[in-house]
Amino acid sequence: MKEQSKKKNSKPIIRASMAFIVLMAVVSMFSDMVHEGANSIIGAFESFLGAPALVISIVGGAGTLIGCSLRFVTGYFADKTKHYWTFTIIGYAIDLVSVPLLACVPNGGWGLAVTFILMERVGKAIKKPAKDSIVSFAATQNGVGKSFAFGELLDQIGAFIGPMILTLTYMIRSDLPQYEKYTLGFLVLLIPCVICLIVLLLAFFKFRHPDRFEKDPSDGNARSFLKNSAFILFLFASAMLAIGFLDSFSLINSHLYLLGLVPGDYLPLLYSYAMFIDALSAVVFGLLYDKKGFLSIAIATFMTAGYSFFIFLIPKLWSIFVGLTMWGIGMGAEESVMKSGITTLSMKNERASAFGFYELVYGLFSFAGSGLIGWLYGVSMLSLCIVSSAFIIFSAILYLISDINNRKHANPKTISKSESSIAIGDSPKSRSDQNITTGLAKKKRKPFGIKFPFHKARYCLNPFTYLTI
Image (cartoon, rainbow, N blue to C red):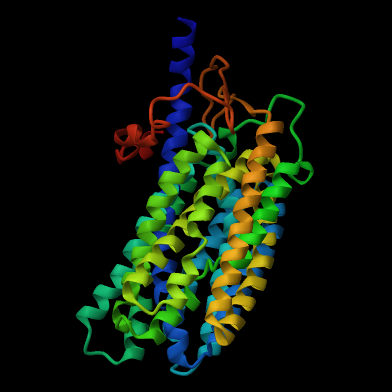
């Protein structure tokens, strides 16, 4: 009877946290329609405006560097001030508006295009640590791996639809000159931009305090992420991955444009395919993370290692698809299980700082890697592929070592589901305490893994849910 009562009392906060995760996933979906739709043509757009390959690669890396450096700062202040929503909303506004502004770039003005591209990265830097943190607070109520996997699934649905919108636009207006096609494409992306901001504000008004979904660990063994050897090893592995893995599509997009295997108007379809693989990868490895922990990251990294050989070395269409499949797997793992790993290895009161610090280190090494790959692109394609694969394989080995280290020293976090007031700001009746174990703790599992949160779909997709919580 007691156990049944506890389960009944925990349902409202679990439902509220799931509703919040769904809303933020919808925000990410429309956001990705905008900037991933733009990413599918930005490399080709820069080439069309006259930017050389080295500049395109360095801009991609510099954008990551600037953005990730700022993420460390914004993450720190988000933790200190607890104004997670302020950073999230301002960041989204700058990030989204930067894309339609690319329609204002004159023909030949690649310098102005670079400015707007970097502006988009600044917006991402402001929003990312705070946004990832508030989602992670709710994720602890539903399973970290599957919650981030669900968010990444909707995220990549948006990333798939965005380039498709541009392709459809170009097919309808095939009579336009190439420059005017680019301009029209950026303007069309203003529509999902507006929808995204509306859903974001709805999430804000309904869930003012998402940090209340998670309580700090009650045990005294919790360590700061900077003193956690598993986190440091995880960070070093990610740094090696950042050098060898191109997380920006710009250079790949430019290479495919110059290769000429696919007409320029259909290049967004290749990016859509990569994002489709990204979404599947996020779901598979997100669920695997809840079952196997960091081992899932190592497996995904190994599967990504040879992508550069197929994209840059073999000028065949089948090879491009194989390479993009491997690249998509890497992107899906980066966006879901990496976040799950940081959530597992950090405490609630410094979660945004942990995300920001991770992004800073990843950005620094990604910048160095982008410059190295961009330089090798003009020197030797074979050298580019060997260097890229070597760093990725090395990072996969480090993730395996990190998994072994974490299993030896990990103490599962204990989080209480009873709250004096939950994230939506109400004051519910007192509930019985129920402790749940998160992280890498072993649980009773059903065959083939953990039940995915779609079992709450009827509740979460009911429009009246968000008016009555």
